[in-house]
Image 1 (tube, helix red, strand yellow):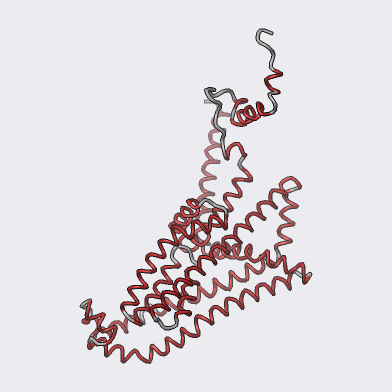
Image 2 (image 1 turned 180 degrees about the vertical axis):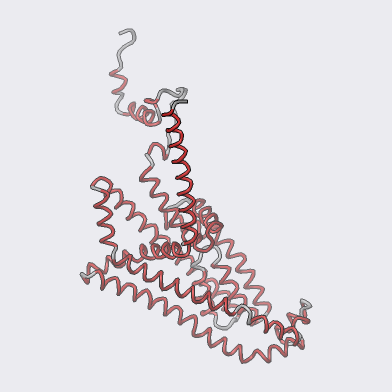
Length: 385
């Protein structure tokens, strides 16, 4: 082997080693900053969803900053109103429940009342003895620090996402203009199509998700109202808000609704549990794929598979962003994959695979030519000519 070949081999080896090291460092950096990256991804999601409203309002008020501020204030007021409708009656109910706790404990220990009869039926009265209850109370103080830390992280995440989304929407025209200038005149039209279609997908996903949540909340209210559970409207609204989370939202709402129903009566609790078990299967495998397929224009099977895989890989955030991510991936495939590769035509009947010039594109042209009045047959030279 010559010295030139040795140097070439060594250079290729160093390049491969450098690429592997760069990949490892990049993955380590992504893993170390995964929390901030997730916050940024969620902020992009909300920024894309709110940008059309800001653009529409900007045409009226003529100022981007004012339009952005008004839209975000309206969104904040909407969330605050929904939170007040849920939290205020919930705090009132928790206060009344706290006043009844001593009486409920005495009834449970004696095997009386709804809770006591339920414990007696399932042979769980020994866990309601005074010594056991004191040990449970002592254990409740152990994870307090962890709960406070989690609450602080959640507040920090919420503030960061809101600020990032606000700045993204505010600076969106400058960012888009700078990106299009860097891309040049040719790719600019493609980038505009990608941005427009991606925005439509995110908006359709939000509208479809809201429709599913309204259906879930409405059915929950009907069931709780028929069973006579107190605060049926508040509980149904809470379930609808939880149901905005794909896959697991209905489960979280079921826990809250079933807990309230069991406090009312064991029969109501069992009925609510059965309702949510049936409804969650219908929502995950029928409502969500069909409604999201129409809103995002995706195949229902693609919707279901993307949500399941993303929830398994990235948890709650993955389930939340799976459907718009799948829709945006479809847009990118449509823009960057040639049409002949997206849907390959069938080869001609009896025709073997020909040279490169007779590939799928040539086959499609050949199938179209005979429809043009037989011009191709008229130009063909006669046999033996």
